[in-house]
Image (tube, rainbow, N blue to C red):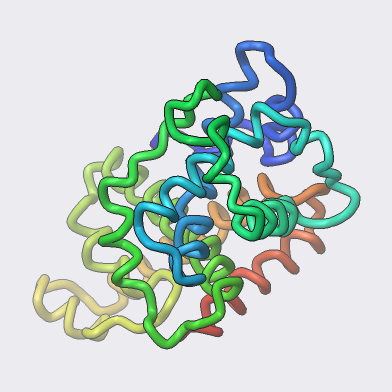
Length: 241
């Protein structure tokens, strides 16, 4: 995945996605990559079929590029994900998927979304989470967590420590490991303190990467705003746990 999933902040991507210059398509694709599945899951939880949810999601991102919708996004008025979900709600309510201009292959900008595993992922979502907005927030939060874990895994791989990552990943953020650090130490024949130190260092790096990733999504990446966004992120996850 590289050093960072976001070479620019979300808001700089939003600005770049406006207009018809070549970079706008790449910027739109980056935004699409990070938000399409939370929006797809939102549509499914509203009761849309797999096919309708795909059309709505694909059409929505095409509309973002072909209309002036992104011009209305204002980083001084709140989070981009809130703006995006509000716009998508309107898209669903007005059934934009029925408009030819928004159909897949209907002459608008092609937005590369791979729906191959979308329904399989959706069927794994918590069945008792009936509020589509909460599912969107949960999936947004988990997307960031999964991205951070992927970045950290790549760092372990680069250091030739893939086996270590497999052992300590369950301890990194949710603290729901099925085995204890003592079990790992005994199985590997090493001191428990060695495992504890590895977990401590990995957690510290996880927190650093999480702050970096969240810092890319806020309007002004101050420590206070990042802290608040991280609290919201874990609150969205706890709502489901």
